Length: 474
Image (cartoon, rainbow, N blue to C red; front, side, top):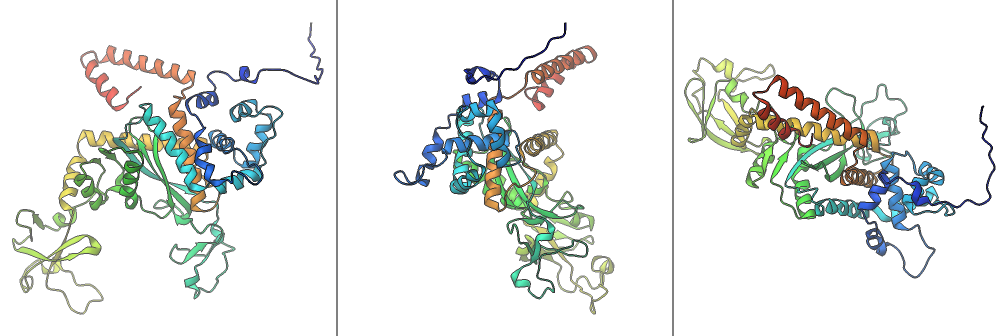
């Protein structure tokens, strides 16, 4: 017999909202590990205590911000609409069915009122909670940078005020035929965004997030925002100092990619006693001298040419961070390798007859790093950094809206980065691993263990030990 549902609207309905939210629901888990009461204390100075109309509860606003990025809801307007009918959202926000949802325009004003400073305090508070619970040690960190699309188009680019000699001072209507540069042009809609992009790809208006994570837990310790054209290696020690001072931790190990491998950075890591796993910025470091047949003697501090003559230190080139070594005057004139060592330039009227060689001031540490790059330990850490850092970036961009700026200006982009990093850290804090993922992980680990034991019985212990070392927690 075919059933038929009969719907009769009820004027009043009594139910327990608390009972509707599953115990393993992510929002319930986040609510259980973090007390948001500190938000009211942190924002008390921003409001008048005895005058004016009551504002949105700052704790309610922060919970809405977390919801927005946790579920990657694209706008303030849409998150307010979804709160209207989503019972889980209302439970997390402490709103009953009769309570009104804040207007989306109020969220914008509240965000501007709190500013970058308050969101940083909230992010730092969550990191400290992770430290207190033993999830973060902070002695081993990894750092990397990633581009973020700005909320501005190339058509907004216009010449800077000090470049008025450019014919067209109005924003570009058409991209074809236009040439832009950060030195000559600026976006009229978002002046903080700059042209940037990887080698070989078109440049776009972007920001860059420089994230530092704890190596073991992948907790984000610092999501620093700069313009897109900022070089990774130039902010390295600024962020290390910030993390150590903010959380009172001592960094003992640092892992980064080639973008951080400047000689001065490698030298500072060694002086600070930080064990660095950072490859040289240039893979051919030190090779230019040897390829030409010259040799540098560290003990004597001289360079020997292919003919066996010594070249002595002459001057310091600070712009190139190099020490210059020169051959004695007149010695190169009768050398049979003169044309090879000092070729005549097409626009040069007179050939130089004195060979000069540049030796980088950090050559020693660069040579040591070059040798360390070949070790298994160094290769393993570089591989681990790649999947961990790229995984954190992919999670933020695919699931939480880090791929594009929602607002304009570096300060608001920094707020967005703080909230997204807070959301990612909260997921780590509650150990958010769906049951099916846990089951599959345990099944895969057991199957792999059985396979190794059957086909490689002699090396079972060694393979298992190495696998657990490089893939902890699998």
